[in-house]
Image (tube, rainbow over all chains, first blue to last red; front, side, top):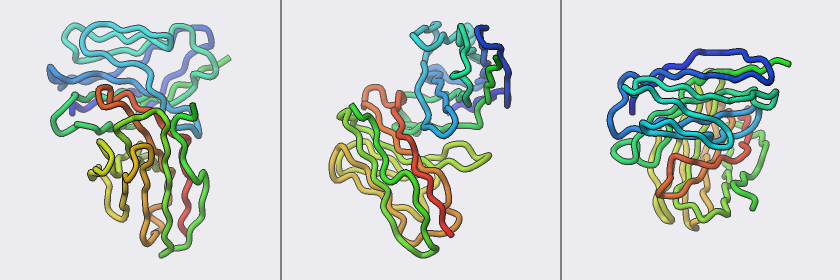
Length: 113
Length: 113
């Protein structure tokens, strides 16, 4: 799986958009970008994933650059409940990563009132 | 639906004791996983299963055994607990076709003294 690099921490004001970047410059053509988050004392929660097109669901939007070497998770209107550690994961649907998710250190997002 | 349920939520063991952590899911998922989470280490995969009766080693399998006798249950065993196994343990499950969109339990906080 490609290695990912995320900032250690970020701040965001409540009601504003939170933009969380992830670098995955060694991503290969069959690897997807997945985002999870973990709120304090809870299990991780799946947010969204994508291959090369931008994706949106009820929780967030995912913007993947054209060369696929980086992506940004966007929480359009952050709330205090969005304070969490956000993980960017790159993995493929088969090969050695089959059935496995590898979590890195993630980005600690703190949403302020 | 209960989703993914872990039992127990908290446990204190003495060094050398054994115990079994139970994970149950009611979503008819094929894949199940056990992770441990330690401060500064992120989530690390211990063992996983891609179907009833199958198990495979993850990143940190030593000192643990697992069994998947029923599709809905995935058991994690510690035969002789060590202080190094003090951690928060998370179970997760997913559909085969969407294996990277995993649902996580709330965690088991284990302390070995």
